[in-house]
Length: 206
Image 1 (cartoon, rainbow, N blue to C red):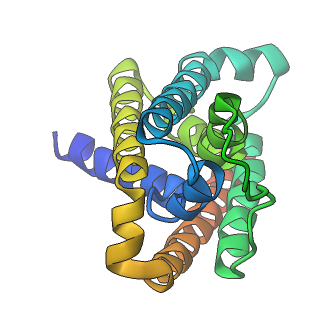
Image 2: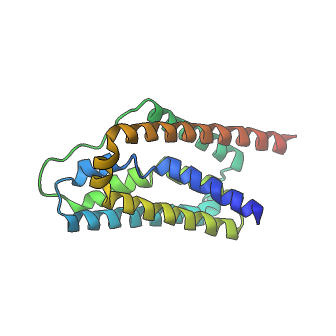
């Protein structure tokens, strides 16, 4: 039981760091800031639901994907760790998103799919993080990972709907600081994945 609680906390921390609902608020506002409340709600719901479906598919089919392409767990952890490390490193460097700001009052709801759902919410870093948690997990832990990711999607939806209030109350500077802290955590998670991959690799070859 204690092991499951520890695992759940680790999964929540990993997903929260990589998704970071607070840091995605400025991106969301830059895309839908000119839209009415109903359109913002529709886009938020579609984006978070799409992200949940995409990542869940990878979580459920993760082991099958490994078998299909002959991917070993050590190789996945090392490669995934490198990818996640650079995602965190970019956040620490405060690199801006490539998402363009929209000034037109007409908002295309398809932006809920791209770029909001893919790649902002369900990007490579999120998918790799999730698949790392289920790479050698049983069905119970896979269910826990899916549930926690769903919880993060709900928190993201909630933060999007309160985005204007959050910006007004805490400001861009605080969000920037939170983003840097999350970037550091992500970089550490990536480094840990690389170390785990190397350790497992040596166990296989020993």
